[in-house]
Image (cartoon, rainbow, N blue to C red; front, side, top):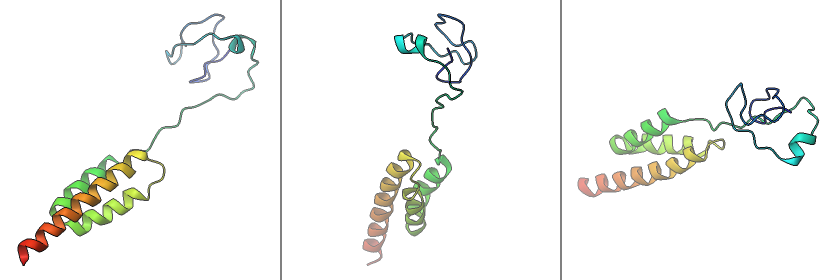
Length: 105
């Protein structure tokens, strides 16, 4: 039997993986399954932390650049978090832009 997290070969009736430390859940299918050389590797969401922070800062200081960063983050399809922040950055930039136009008048 092999670890579903890292692919390390496990000893019989192991409760934890000796390589990655993940808990091994014993099921009937696990004990009867033959390893085919493939294992599941969890996907890691890309982090756009710098772009998100830059987007919020620019949305407040220079709204047009905040909108550009928001569009960039919104088009990142590999990160749900980036898409969520893009919407907020766009809202903040639009509000600041509207307020600045109202103050100029």
